[in-house]
Length: 264
Image (cartoon, rainbow, N blue to C red):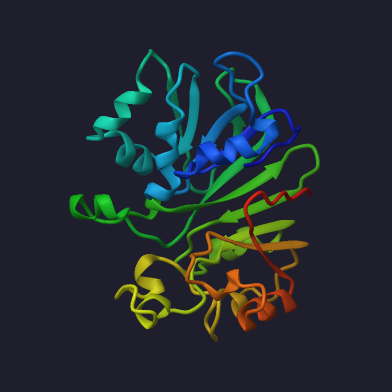
């Protein structure tokens, strides 16, 4: 979640754990009956671990959701559960994100937040539940470049990145803080543990370690805070005493943790 003023909050994706996340963060507690400090949600793709939390926000409070048109259609069309977000006219307002175009983030009341967001196309894939319904499209997966208008400070948010394209590198280059895909340490992490047959790249995740991994490829970033997010429970980065974690921390990377707060 991000905020420019500490009063209005924008969620970056809506995970299945959204209820516990809201409960654990005092600034997001309701201030009146049927109130929510959440002004809008910005989705980077249609995976269930990024969208399922929307269905927990189905009470009588208007929602604003930013997403590409592909992600909006994938979540709403043919999804009978989406009717829980159609309890009254205008319960959900979708605002289309187009890669390369900067948008002012606003809530249901239309007031500008002081934050601007730009979608950056990232190599990815269709969500598993949509794989049989069509071909993949560049708008299925995006990263976000978020800029605070008053200070010019920039946050780069890339929770799922299948590769480092020129556009991704450009978005990371001048960021003050980078949140980047730390799902897997190695390409064969799941097969090596007997937990699956797919490699990291098959699941649209660039591994952290190795000669071609993100740790080596992003060594020259100037951001003062560099944080690996979306870390899978098989990734040795989660262990405080692992060699992999020491390697990442030695070159300035942090590992995200529940309840972590970052101030820029």
